[in-house]
Image (cartoon, rainbow over all chains, first blue to last red; front, side, top):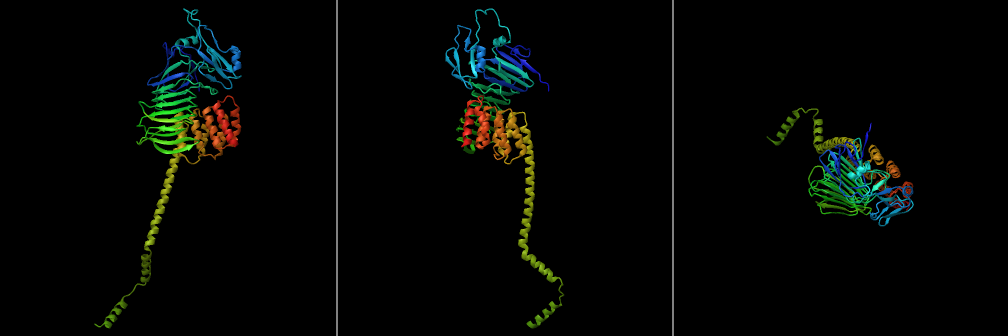
Length: 335
Length: 200
């Protein structure tokens, strides 16, 4: 089968109509794959375009390189952090970034040093132009246009798959204020990996809560530490996370299809309409609720509670919800 | 008429009647029928119930067999579905409804364990396969999966499962996980815990 891979770099091709802060891509059938550690608000709608909009004002361009210490030293020398703009003071990384065997720490403001011989994340620099010298000129090249649009994402289409990912697989964007809104058609499926799509990447960063709202298509989400907030997502939904919290809310809808949630130790908090007709299998350190569940069965396994719960007396097919929060708690609330 | 004369007259009357030669046999049959009627009725009744029960059982088993075949065919189809949600429904259905080992379904689940792209499907499949802890095919494939799996959450699930099964052959792949610096700390700590559990 012939696959035509179309690399769409930001705003350059005719298939993308770009406004100042949004990019529109015709796509209403297939799978939207998002492989990015950035912060997103994703909204479903009854349309036929994927619309990407940046929600931040300043692009600081702080990059953290994912590379071996030796490679980074070869590239940048022993001083990993660098800045060109002498008037700018870069804020240090919040907290520290744990590498595989090393540890990257922001010791003082604007400086980053690396401990350990083979840290995964060892580089940090700020890309800042000399504003006076560039006055009246405009940047040339794709990267510059990306900066102009404020959308630092690489977009590829491969058959019935639309892929949105970070610009470089070897980079993880660490701009704390980089945030995008993506509006997606309800007719597509969403496959969202907050750690990127490189299977060999086992390094995670904690970012702000990412959200998915009002979406009627199928959803697959893989996360690590990011908190996820889903509102009025009808399903089917599968979510897995190492330690990120999962918050689900049904405000204007009821669950219609399977929800499957696996977490190692993040909490799972779900608000359900009291009229929901559901069968819930829940495993967690503690299970708490103010809903009128019928407890079908209950046992304790490895110190965790395992319960089968039934909600709603109506006949017909009940929607299945399987929650395994591991060492985390499960909260099931009335909407 | 005197009594004597009456008896003599009536005796003569009876003697005059010609009795059938089969009268005794008929009488015997009637007597036997009367005496054994109740128990024979019960036997016939039980016999019919038994036949009906057998037919019912055969029909029920046939229906169950047809239902099982239909359910299995539907299950196999859903396990091959493109939708991860559909495959999850299939695995959960197997976990909830199937109590007997079916090699064809187990082979399909083993294939899912090694090749499905969705972590939730693979984790649910491990749970489903653990229903049959004595099945050697399942144990060896869980071991093989532990050696190849790269998703941290699925790795943790496999580690806990093989520790639960007290599968000593897991020590070698666990050692490799512990020594592999590419694995994240929580996977390594789970593997270390499982290794200690298996050694003691």
